[in-house]
Length: 400
Image (cartoon, rainbow, N blue to C red; front, side, top):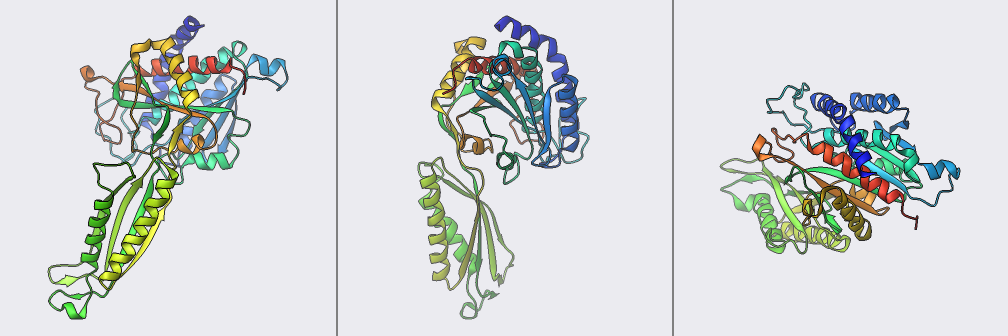
C-alpha cells in the first residue's frame, strides 16, 4: 500500500505543482475566493469526485466513499474522516522574483494556503483512486476565510460541515522545519486570539492648563504599563497580552480628549481567557477613573485555542513515522499564534500538524506572512504522501 501511494504521488506531483502555481499567481482575499473555488471545482469534477459548493460563501466539501461504506450502504463501522485545507490569501505585496508570482496587486499567498489547497486536491485524487482500499467516508473541506474573523471554519460548522464526521485532520506548511520533516504536538497546541480595543476619554485641552483638562494620554499609558506588569511578555503562564497601537491625536501643547489602544490577548485555557478579559476591564476602568477619565473597552472574540486530541495525534505521528522514518517526525512546542482550525478542534477529535517547507540551500527560508515567503515545492510530495497514508490508516480503525 505504501509503495502504491508513493507511485500515485509521483504520478500526480507535476499536476499538483501546476495547481499550486496557478493559485499562487491568482490569490484572493478572505471570503472573496471565487476564482480559487472555480479551480477547485474543475479539478474535482475532472476526477468525478462528488462535491457541494457555495458553503459559507466560497467553501467546497468533496466526499469520497470507501469500499465498506458502499458495501454496507452507509452502515459502516469505519470512521468518517474530514481533511481540511484553507484557500484564502493575505493583503501583502509579493516581493519574490519567481515566474508565477502574484498578479493581484497587494494580495499574496504568504501563508501557504495555495500549497494546502493543491496538496488536498492531490490527496483527493489518490484517495479517489484507492477508494476500494479504504473504509468509511472521507470529507475534503476546502475552507474560505481562515485569515479573517470570525473564521471560515466557524461558518462552515454552522452550515453542518461536521455532521456525521468523527475526526478531522489539518496539515499546515511550516518554514521553521526543513523540507523532509513533519511536526506534531499532542494536547493544547495553539492559543486563542482576541482583539482588545480600549478608548480612554476625558476633557482635552491646553497642556499648560492642567486644571481645565484631564489627561487621557497619561491614563492610557498607565493602563498599558499596569497590564504589562500583570502579564509580562517573558512569562505567558497566565496568557499573553500585547498592545500594538497607541493613538493619541494631540500635539506639543494639546492634550487629546481621546486615546485609542489596540492589542491582542492569547491563552491556551478558557478559564484564563475569561480571567484575562476581566482583568483588562477592571484595570482600564480603575486607572481611567483615577485620572478623571472613563474607559470604553471592547474585546472582540477571535478564535478559540486549538486542541490536538492526544490519542489521535499520537496515532497520526506514528503513521507519519511509517512514511518518513522516526527521525523525520518531530515533537513541536506550543505556539502563541492562532488558527481557525481551532473551531473544528473544539467540536470533534482533531489533529493539526506541520509540514516542513524551508530549504536554506535554495534560499527558501522566509517566514509566513512576509512578502518573500515561499516553499520548497518538493515538500508537497511529502505532504500528500503523509496525509494519504494517515487517512487510509485511520480509515481502517474501528469507529468508537
